Amino acid sequence: MTGYFNNLHWISILISFIIYTALGAVWFTILFARQYKISLGRKDETLQHKAPIFIIGPMVCTLIVTITTAILINELQIQTISGAISFAMIAGVGFLCANTVNIAINPNIPHPIHYGIITGTYHLTGMVIVSLILTFIKW
Image 1 (cartoon, rainbow, N blue to C red):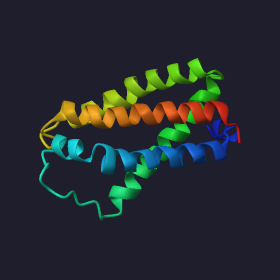
Image 2: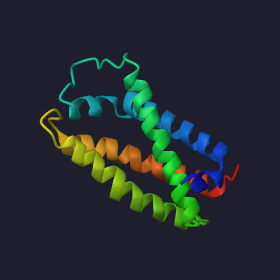
Image 3: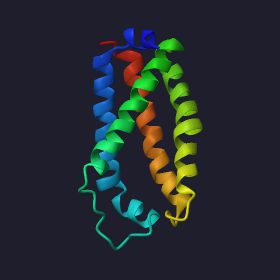
């Protein structure tokens, strides 16, 4: 298992992680803040995100997704724009979007498809960006 980590480009992973995390902050607090609240059934509320888990938790998950993406891109020897985008679309839709919708289908999220579209497209966009960075920046 540790052999996978030896060939990774950690600066590229850090850059990807920072951009993916920043995208999430902008996505959920500026670009789609209102739609996100509606999907949660809380359109007239101010969402409380003050506890550390609401900041650190998503960052840890984003880091894990980024490192896993780096391992897969490395092992699959993806080296082209079309390869990076194809990988991102397959992994993004097949794992991230599908899992997001699956998690949303529960009684605590009143609009699971709406939530899945907002959150899933964030992850898909992030996956495309991360895949492109990890394919072409080898630091």
